[in-house]
Image 1: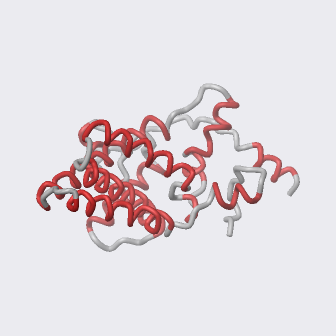
Image 2: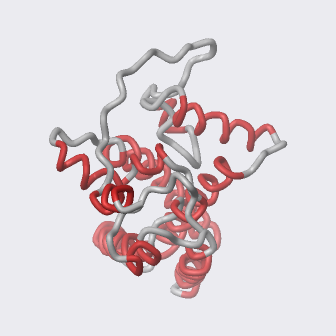
Length: 223
């Protein structure tokens, strides 16, 4: 069910339902087996458990770097034209305006091509069987990102770790939009110095006007 202030992205109700909204369980159902089978296949192909573990951790770490780059320079890219902003709005700005439980994970039509791209890239860099546990760790990193993101928006954590993850992400949303680009880990924010320093206060920043998608404007006109 859409929230009262939900933003409609597509004119087609079918596309809006199945390409704009995704049940949060889908990534685990789709990518959990891929991650496990990738790591297991590396072991089956002759890699030792220790080497598989190292490669898996390296793949997970590689994801956290990709996550930071994606969030900082792709999601927070601001087009210079009104029409460009209209098209780019659903990429990420919609999430800053409206947090909906079924718009927090990537739809398969986006995640599947990315999977194919990274699998091809890792094959070219590592070859087989090395790529399999690395790719499995990378996919586990993606799943961690999805579910940490969901957790920070809709859970009320009681642990120190959970509270820290939630605090940092909500600071990014409400006070420091140019900080804390890492969601599953703050590592690269410290490396690239985009973390919030203790005692630092947010600076007032002029909000960029983002036009809503045309489908949403048409829906508002027709009530």
